[in-house]
Image 1: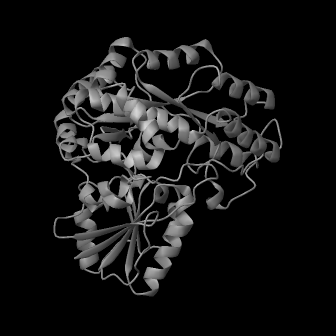
Image 2 (image 1 turned 180 degrees about the vertical axis):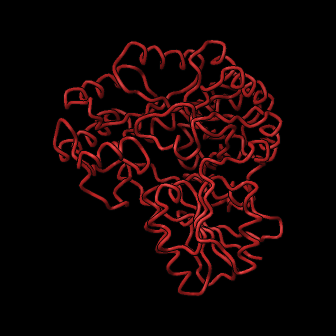
Length: 428
């Protein structure tokens, strides 16, 4: 039985870097399919869909709200051709009722241990319209390695430099942040994978650079430390979301190859300033994630926050506008107050105002968002700052003997031999 697995394209925001990371959700789903299902994968962000490819059914995996309309269009085209279409993924769960109109079946929840039933129903002509496993998570112990063999590796690079692989060591989140849907999607219970399963998955990854996509690693200190200890022998360099603010944990993270972290910057407090400094003290870079448009932010607050970012030595900054995604408290509050005026899901991209802010006009918030990007990167471009971070990881790889000569050739071509030579001379 042949499955055509598709990850729909989505439009990047102006100013965003143009690279594409290999998506995680589709290859996690593919690993849960019965072994007799032959899977081919198309990431529409890096290649065109061939609608004439032979297949028995189509699976569309959607992560972002800005993918849903394109996903629906893809499904419509395949269904015209008589193909059965099954939807899954994060944004399928957030937009389930609408997606039902374009699907033969919608799968809600985590797929491990459940796909044998779905495929049997498909083969027997009894495919259900909805398979709803929300809130009924499978045992975390059965989550195995992803099907990374499905990636077309040559399509995932930026200026010739291979992109990081995505990897997860846990699911669920015990926090419930205001604009976030994770507690709805994966539950409030933190579910770490057994360390032996983490090691098994890591052993299948040839890439020396990873993005650990867990919602937050700072959820269980003992498990977090054990994870970092197990990572050390792999000598991989990795990016993640927040790490525990503890010297012992940070030291282990640095030994384990922490490259840089995404750290929310939500105010101008000394705590945030010191938090960033502590990461840097252990050689860990910081990309600040800054959310604009919350009800407690005035125009002056946003301007002060932007000025503060220039003082605290962030390596990178990523600015977003509050996007009230369905099944979040932000969405419920703004809908109840009648403040969401734009319901085009393509515009829910965290870079476009779709609601009435509390202390300013939508147009002014949009201007402040643009001002934030320009102000932070006015003296040094985003690409220049990214290269500085990349140069640090290259030096660390040279120190531990894991850097790959092909990277040097590719980077020489992309950034210029003189720039790269200076980096390497420091370590020779």
